[in-house]
Length: 402
Image 1 (cartoon, helix red, strand yellow):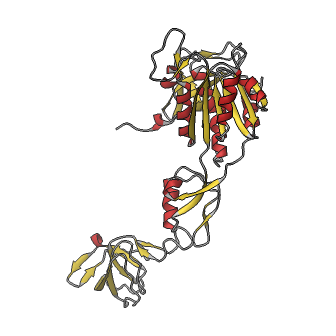
Image 2 (cartoon, helix red, strand yellow):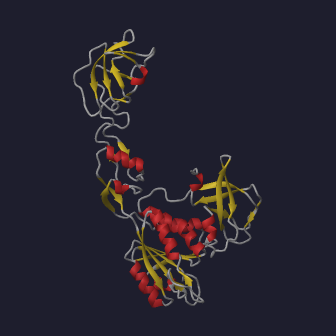
Image 3 (cartoon, one colour):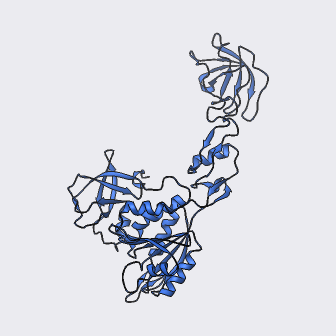
């Protein structure tokens, strides 16, 4: 068996970024750009007013009173200098006209006909946004490899971009195997179960930013498994669940080898998720995950999700790891690292975690209740209050309620 870390290194060493595609700026949200984005102009393009108020020359200020000789709305510019000792009414965003270097807000002045009286103290340059104070022309504003969040989309728009290159979304084929499986909408008969894995894995693909392609269910025959796997090679990555163990009807490993694939490893030293294989087939990564629902989803989080993110150009591909204080005793009496489903919270500016109870790998509700994975080393015995390592699956607990 390989360790979790060795399996991750091995897999990611085989993953290369996908091609790029041109999309509209808005469609670039949550995608990764492969190129530097350079400012074509200064932002702001000119000194401008940060307030609705009055613009004037601070050096020419005398006696705290100024005569107002004009009005400058946003969207217009004035080239004629404002005479020393006079002011011009100006709106937020309007370029500060020649002869002015300071703005005083409307609410801070007393208006007396065409004259205004200023407050006792006015700082030179107040309420003026200087040209280029946000970005300078020629500077790299968004480096290659950046994830495009709403703020990057806004900046790209401010720089005049209407389209840009991004790494394309990974197409991920998902195959479930087993004669016992029925699709949702069916009524389970004795010995039959509903195929939930395809849909939980498809949701995980979507959550990572990929495009899932459902291949359905492969019956437990070598020929059927080979046929479905071959169809899955039209995608960028193939994820198979079930049929990867050592039973008489577990054909996934044999099918991969029958099609000319090279199985890099077959078992990972972890619980849940030991029977897990990774292979390259016709240049495509193939993940064969366990059939138990929790084991499949945990394996996806540790190995498939980082691979999808790397393929789509992301530099940061792993979920956050934190240290959290256990709220009850916990132990691992097994010989493999145990990834225990946990409920993480923040109390007194520190992380706390408790388990979700029964840790059966078929108990999907243990993941519904939790938002993290507690890693317990083989033979570990922890008392309440001990700090343990937790992989955060969901940080929604840090958000406030309405």
